[in-house]
Length: 427
View 1 (cartoon, rainbow, N blue to C red):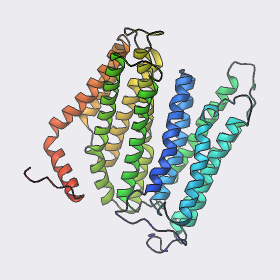
View 2: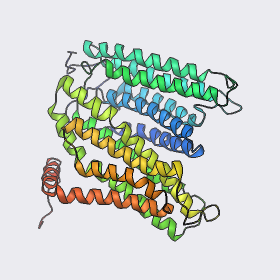
View 3: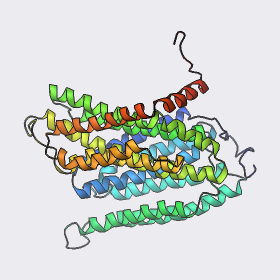
View 4: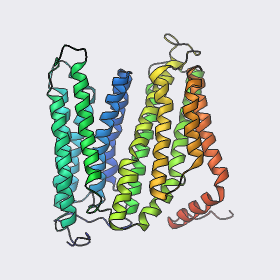
């Protein structure tokens, strides 16, 4: 195989080519991450403190990095052919164990195996399997193999710190939560080394063989995360009798989720794919790394935080025993609700700036407006705070459609024509 990656790869592996799309196995693979995201939301909901939120976001960042590794691999060789298929099944099983262990990632529960050690072990297996398969797939591509060797260093450094954190004794100091502070710091350092190390080694040597596959792959994980926000709406009212406040809150929650979907898929994902398609070589790899691997994380994190906020709102409006309809959603529940959308929009602004070199002003204004509205929402009943959030999100989309209507129609018509979806007769 040449350095361009067009020749035959390792036996029973099929190279991804320009125009290739996501395989069914990759969709199956993502189901594990659906469960993992619900576990992250549950972890934060069970301990709705600053520490609990930080722990949840650290776990999410680690899970995201695992997912990104296999997105890069799946853009190099088909995930559903030969040895890659079998390996991905092994990775899925391991990732499922990691997801099951999320509640014990920081604090071990009594009985059974050590949760932090099982979590760190599963994570290491997932990362090592990725490097082994990727190395095998890159046979003959010296540039890619050299890059994989460089990438192994921050991975091993981060994994070592995670194991160090996992092996800390439960009572390290006499200070309350002293061991938790150190363990959390080690997690943060591990992720900083892994994320920073990949940025430091540069983009030369990485390959994005199919822009269509790359953009579709990341679009699907956004849908997976949005699906978790919908699940949170249902989980928030489990075992509660249906009522008008629950119905209204459900509609408002769907409206917010729909606005976030629209913000990504109506125009941005189409335009971004075209920009990536035109780029080549190291420029394409750098664009894919920055605007997708890195800048999609605040979007996914924002959706997970939104899911947490929606779960709390539904619990407030549906549970008449502990809360009334006039109770405001104070504290971290409110910050998760509004902060999640703010994080999502900031990710979008960074994504567009890196990918297309421009700023979407309606989204920038909406982001600032949401920041300013947090103190206002803090004084409103929980349902009204959700209604205000939905109003801003839907209003943002409406303004974009009005301001950019003609350009939007041209882009979407061109995209639909390319994908065999012309206008119906008589239209």
